[in-house]
Structures are given as structure tokens and as C-alpha cells.
Image (cartoon, rainbow, N blue to C red):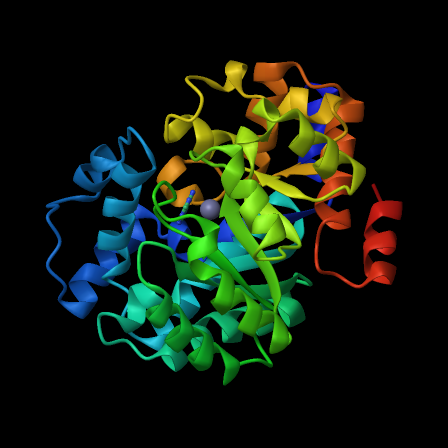
Length: 330
Ligand code: ADE
Ligand code: ZN
């Protein structure tokens, strides 16, 4: 086998952009719908799969939120998370920082505690049994209002022992980071780290706002930054991480094909990027597949792949000593 592909598979790596609801595989969705007696507009697993044909972010989100309706009990969130962790084991992901969207569940009557406890129990088991470390980041849905985000923040504060930070996701265009400036300020004052999706579909202005107003430690996606020289300089000078998700970007029409993705160019500008899967069950690719397909499409060198993997640890919320330990092994 190609030496670089072998290197990708066997090297320990971190994942920093992963929505746990986006790991709901069609077969599990179908099973849960039956178990929990939730009506879904699909008669078979194959029908679910053929609905996964997206044109942009919103067309994906509509299906993704519908899918999440089958998650009801703590054990559902546990099983969902555990299945993802087994994929991590398979891909040699040794550290993962996962997003969850509390409002997707609380808005349909599921308790915040049910969601976070199910996820957290699976992560604790993975630490013991699989040697995988992790963090949890709760995201506010940006299409909802500031009040709803404040309520969610208060719920999250009761689980501060399990949640390291807050993020911002969902429909980007028309919902700029500025809308959540006060929520993020309170989150920071409460001791949460902050990240935000910005520059996935929307222009670089959203990235500036995430940095200046939300004081984020990382930008999720950020691929629209290359149109803005001043921003590229800042991101490069300060080595602000951008959690790039190449196959997601192609599936949602941000780039027509992987060969046109700008991640190689981002690397050449010395940007702190790494490769992530975003919503792997919906896009058909976990981390290794994202790395392998990007390597092939963009002819990435072993040195570039190594940099991407090292960056995944550098950009993580791991302790500095732990980062160094992993990087030494690469
Ligand atoms: N929620 C899940 N995946 C997302 C993405 N790629 N962008 C914004 N919100 C999301
Ligand atoms: Zn995302």
C-alpha cells in the first residue's frame, strides 16, 4: 500500500470538529426510530441514505435535525457516542473534542441532563477501555435567538464539570457571530473556552467577528479566509487554529470537488489547520477517509500530512505536556 496512506492510518491523531449528532448512521437512525416509535419519512435504511444528497448547508441541516428526533433516552446518547468512539479507535484518533447541540434536544422535550450524561458516560468508558481522551463542547444554534442561548448557557453551567467550552453552529448566513456577543462574554466570565463556526459559507467578516467579539480560541471551518489578506496574516501570525472539514465542504457545495479545496493553499500560507470529519455519518467519511481522500485529491506530501496531524494536537485543548507527548510519537 501507498506509504503515505499507511502513515495516515497508523499515526495517532486528534479530532477537533465533530458533531456527535452527525455520527448517527442510517442503520442506527432506523433502529432507534423503531425502538422509540418515532415517525420518520423513510421506509428503509436505503431510503435514508438516498436522502443524503445535499446542495448547501441548510439542505443538510434540515435532514440532520430531523434525524436527531430519534434520540430520546440517555442510553441512545450513550450508544451514539460509543459507536463514534469505536470509529475513533479504528482510525487511531486518540483524542477527540466533540460538539453537541443541546437545543436540538431540549426544544423537543428531552432534558439537557439526559443528553450530556449519556455522552459523558460513553466518553468516560472510552477513556478507561479504549485509552481515548476527550472534551465536550456545547454549541448554541445560531438560527435561534440570544435569549434561548442564554437559557442553554445556564443549563450548561450546571454541568461545568463535564463541558470545557461553548461553540456556535447551524445556519450561518444571516446569523453573524455578533448576535451572540453577550452570551459568549458571559460564557467566558463563567470559565468556558469559546470556539465558533465561521467562514464555512459566509464571508471573512464572520471570522473577524468570531475573533474580535466572541474571543474564540479556534475557528470552525474558516475556509473563506483566503479572500482576505489582512485576516490571513493575523491567522498565520497568531497561529489561530482553523478546524477544516474537507469532505463536508464538498458535500455541502462549498467546493465543487476535493481537488478544488483550498486546504493545501492554506498550509502554504502557514495557517494552523488540521483535518476533521464534521458529520461523518451524513458525509460518509470519518477522519482517516478525510485525510486519505485529501491526500490523493491534492497530492499532499508526507510532510504536509504530518503537519496536519501535529496541528491536530497543537490546536487541541489538551495540556501542553500531553500535546508534546503525542507529537513526539508522530
Ligand atoms: N451542525 C452540524 N454540522 C454543521 C456544519 N457543518 N455547519 C454548521 N452547523 C452544523
Ligand atoms: Zn461543524
